[in-house]
Length: 109
Length: 115
Image (cartoon, rainbow over all chains, first blue to last red):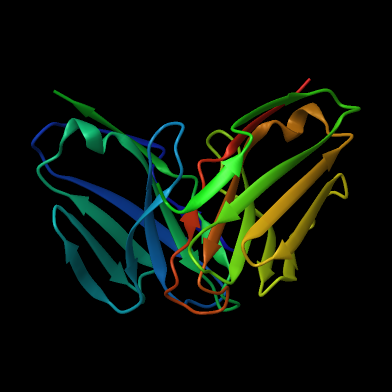
């Protein structure tokens, strides 16, 4: 079967660094996405990885290891506005997006 | 503002009602999607339209009926729903549905409550 696993909830402190992990088992792989979703709002695109390695975009970075079926989203210099759910999604061999249940990130002062 | 709008934002309906959700995208995209989002569950893909043709129907009950009159508009017609259908219904669009790196742009969703 197809499966995406990510922690349900994480807590971090303002100004700190947090890493949100995502592991996947899918029938084929055509890229991995990270989205951010604030409560009551639409998910918004953060990053896309299709090759192994680290992609950096400002305070956010995303890493992919295809051999391990593993990705993480790294958030640096956390701000209160980063409190949100972070969704991991994998495009499988049929180009369908398989979604994780999301990680709720709580930032404390 | 993502360029994808949805109406209504909130909807309360009885099990015998008929209602429709509307989605419009202003991005010039060719693919549109309906998702169901329930608390603490992964997004569930319901329907995909690519160039106005339905390409996916993920075993969705017939009480949900999609309509895509053109590449910019997508409807979800609802009838005789069940309380377990209460959820956030999200519309999304992308350049097309088959390319690997095409991100999806989401609308704000319709919060549906079935009484």
